[in-house]
Structure formats: structure tokens, C-alpha cells
Length: 278
Image 1 (cartoon, helix red, strand yellow):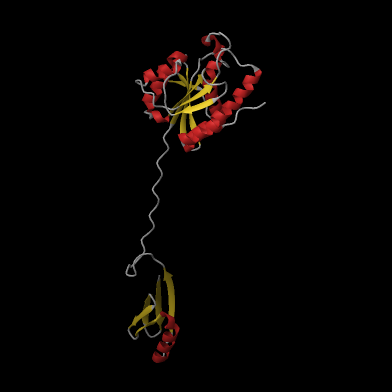
Image 2 (cartoon, helix red, strand yellow; image 1 turned 90 degrees about the vertical axis):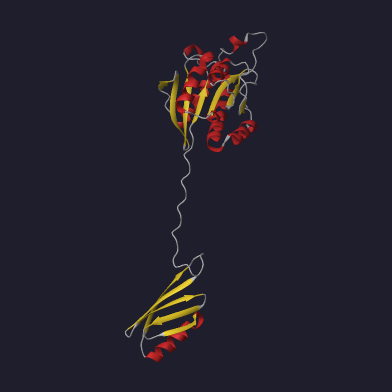
């Protein structure tokens, strides 16, 4: 810490610089060194000796630098944070009223849930998909519902990924899963297609790459000997609809955590989610 003082009088001008308890006076008529603890006594005796009235103004300067540093450097501004990378979230399904509200279209419903909650318009069609851009928090996201029909979903997804140069770790695909209990969510960092034709098509258009996250929504197994192809096109009954709506809200929260806090926290949320109760 430094104490810098300026002394002025009618007889002469003088300055005093105090460092570590020692003060040095200098002027045309005064030259005196004294302890800062006896500063007032020294100043009074100096005044009496010269018969002049000195006026002293002082300021305190703090510094973490060495005592001999002449001046403080300005604080360095913080480096700006890098801009968040965009996410592409794709929901799989089939276009048209015939397929709306069926088990095979729960991926579409997840995208609609996100779009409604985050105020993202899905009114445009690009890359053979119903397409929208917006944000979750301050992170840019793109939402897509391929209109190619399920088995050709990769035509749309591959084109979007290629055009926007999105890293595959930032591409999330939402789809229905026969092997999960109804309305059960499972978030995985990568994996195979599991016999799902939409996922198979996407992997083919990503040059066989399977290292992208996916959110699976359970639709359960078909009853009895029903053909799975027929089962996935069935609509939900009233109780199933309520349970699925609850699951979609959990899925929405999982997507927010994924985008804002990372995969691990989102997976923990999904795995610890409580089931729907009537």
C-alpha cells in the first residue's frame, strides 16, 4: 500500500511520498525524511522551523505489485465465452392425417411438444422435413420431422446434417421402441438401429455412423399374435393417451437438460423419472 501526498505553501511547493512507513519530503526549501507514524509531528516542526504554512493532500493507493511499481495496470477484461453449438433434434414418424396419433408417430409428437413449449414455428418445409429453428435457453436448436415416410428418414436427416455441418454428438433422434414398456423413456449416447427402419435409414445416410444420441419412447409389445407392423399404426386409448402426454412432458424436460447441462445429467433425469400414476 502506498500513501502519496502533495504539499503546497505560499513559500514553496513540495511533495511527499510515503512507502512502508517512511515519508520523503522534497521542495526548494524543505528536505526531510520521517516515519509516517510521526508524520503530524514532523510536519508541525517543519512548519515552525520555516514559519510557513504547508497544506498537504494525500491519497492512498493499493497495489499487489512490488513497491517500486510506478502505476497500476488496468484490469484485463474477461474473454468472451464461445457461442453454444446448435442442436438438431429429429422426431421420426409418418406424414398425413392417417398416421397422426399412432404409436409409430411418437417421435413427431415429441417435436411438437418441444416446439409448443419453446415457441418455435414448424411452418416451413426444408430438406424434405417440417422444419423449425429456435432456442432452448441461449442454445440454438433445429427441430425436424422428416416427411419422407419412416423408412426413408435418412434422406432428410443426412441432408440437414451435411448442410449445417452439425457434429453427430449434437444430433438427437427421437423414435418409438417396441422393446420398451409403454411410455418408458430411454436416452442413449449411441447404438444400433434395433430393427427400426427409420433409424436404419438414418445410419445409412450418415455413412454407417451410429455415434449419435437417441431418445427412445416405449410403445410396448403387440398383444397376442398381432403383427407388429399393424400394432405400430394403432391409436392410443384414453388411459394410454394420458400416460403418453405425461411422458412427453418428461421428454421435454430431458431435452432442456440435455441442451443446457449435458448428456449425463439428462440421462440421470430420464433414468430417475417417476412413472405416471392415475
